[in-house]
Image 1 (cartoon, one colour):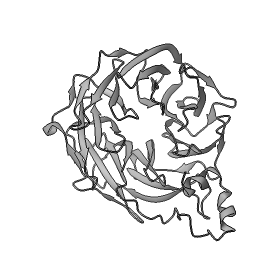
Image 2 (cartoon, helix red, strand yellow):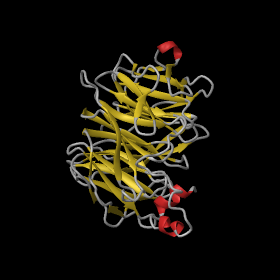
Image 3 (tube, rainbow, N blue to C red):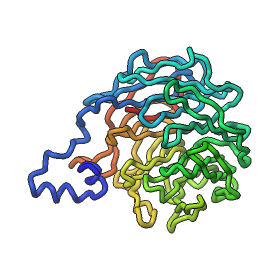
Length: 373
């Protein structure tokens, strides 16, 4: 673990090291040093484009030729570990692929033609091995595709897996690559096992139902240790925290659900497992919490909730673990970046505005974001 991550895990560690003269050792997150090859890719549903942004010392800038015209409205976006390929799904009935250059520029695979046709995914996710892409569509059903590491092309693995009734919207895979959770809106969350050796996805006889029939489960996330599942639940205006058994079975932790803002949509856990962030689409904020690793309990961070643009739908932490990118469907701005603070002017885990971009023309409809290096 590097010193920066240690400081985020143990806020008092800065004081300890400052006694030895480390006052200037840690990165000032309000003026961070730029990372080499540090990018965000944002799916824009209204504009039918993918925007690429690189992170600089005090601003973000478009990658070469960004935004990239897809020609159809994207419905989901995913990136492979190592950031070799970016995949984009569309409700028009296809999955497209891009290769990622060292400068962050995207180039369409397969001469611009769809890699997969005939399905309409609303959620896609690449597994931790980078060998498989899992997609959930409106049927509702889930599909597994093998990824050719040399070309990025996709090949369907086996037959579609029927999901429980609902509207699939997010997928999360546990770090050990053995469990997959698919949120279904008012249908709850389907619990599946996954074999990374064969690409086999199997639904268990378990489903997590919303706290009330009028609620809907949206964003899902798992902590880096694979101990807890986090579910953003509208209607409850809260995030649920559930401990994960080896079988995938879920048990709600004490104190759950934890109150958020209105319309919780996305949820992520930072790379250290210290902080949890929930985007509140209705009231334009992000709720920030510290996570107790032993109990799963969440505690509101000072200053939370943090104000965003209109209708924040999705978030991603960059690969240097310093920045949080937020896609705002309603714009003002369309995309913004926060620093995750540990400096003297910022509460540990708190968010400070770093940079943003707003399209001056027609609506963009930024709704999903991934980070790449």
